[in-house]
Image (cartoon, rainbow, N blue to C red; front, side, top):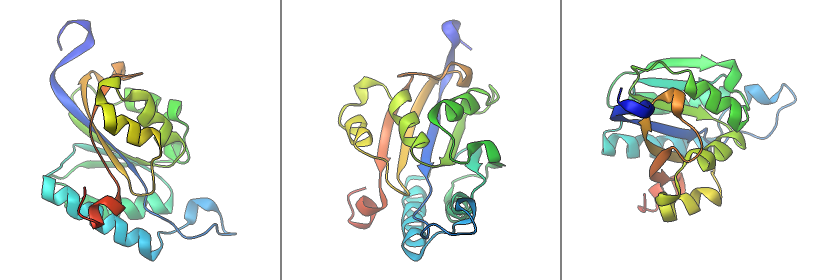
Amino acid sequence: MASGGRRAAVSELILLRHATATAPDPAGDRERPLDRAGRGDAEALAQWIVERGLGTDLVLCSASRRTRQTLDIIAPALARPAEILIEDELYLAPAQRLLARLRRIPAGTADVMLIGHNPGLHELANHIGDLASGPLAARIASGFPAAALARYAVDVSWAGLGHRRARLLAFVTPKEIIRGLG
């Protein structure tokens, strides 16, 4: 690691919000499955991932049913197998808890995907993105819809990740992918 906590190589962080789920269920929010539209959106996103050859070393996924189902659709599209951790602490986690989890990623881990929920994921995306990301950052500021994906370059250690410490490379939504704009 270079001086000042900077890494020699740039890592990538992908933030992914789960796809659309069914309406609230009396059985509980945690067990809400994806609805038909959500499955279609996740499949479109998976195709987008394949076309770009995106891979990751580690996937951190909330323990909710809808995040796990989103992961089930996305995982086969990744360019390389990843270690997958399903974690209760990520369920409906606020931004600060998500950031604290990312800061605990082992130093040797290059690329990470975090699959979670709003509003925490949206707040985290706004918090870590640098101001130089321009129009992409403005798009994220206006919302982080279901099955949206934000891809960041991270050139600090995971422990050093914080406010304005990641460069936004891409932000895509299923509607954009389906319309051919993603």
